[in-house]
Amino acid sequence: MTPTRVSIAAAGVAVLALLVIGLVQLHGSSSAPARPLRLSLAQMRAELAGSPGPLAALHSQAGELLPGGLAAVRARLAALHGQPVVVNKWASWCVPCHSELGAFQRVSLALGQRVAFIGIDSGESRRGDGVSYLRSYPLSYPSYEDQSGQTGRAITDSSFTPVTVFYDRRGGQYIHQGPYPSEAKLEQDVKRYALGA
Image 1 (cartoon, rainbow, N blue to C red):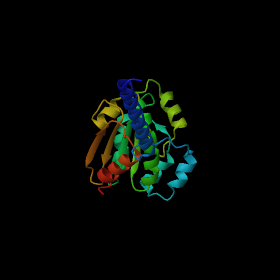
Image 2: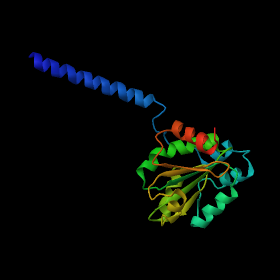
Image 3: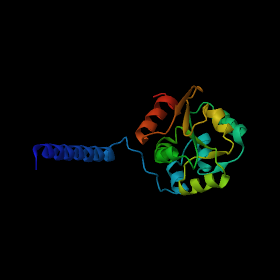
Image 4: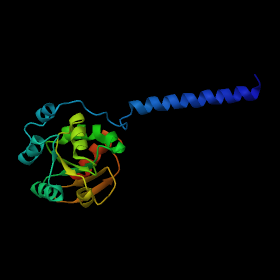
């Protein structure tokens, strides 16, 4: 082998080694997307038992796709006034929404006795798509049906999906565009923007 070929081969091995090390570190990193949980709705409700009244009402509707559109979402937000709230706009067809699903499942269970979580299933072509998605990937809170996308745009001030809106106890609002890359980042933002910690 000529010295040039040896150098190219050595460089190739070095690059491959760096890729393998990077993938191993990413896999073990807390910044990797959280895998969806395989808990039943009953298991989720059991974990959240003892939540305060307004939050317990949300947990009793866990995994449901509720009708009513913008008026219903606004009425629910009004009923939760004084509570920290997280609203996540998602859709079954939205690939980035799938990547953040596990983070929302875990954080809503970890903080669901202190923070209200609500979903908006926005822009589905058929209601059944959202219902099927929630059966496959249950959430510990309800979502509202929004086939037209109008409710999602009005609440999140965005036509993109996913979008997450945080409300603190005083009604202050912070909007996060795009998917959450990890459970840790979502939990950090819930604590910062909803709980004010």
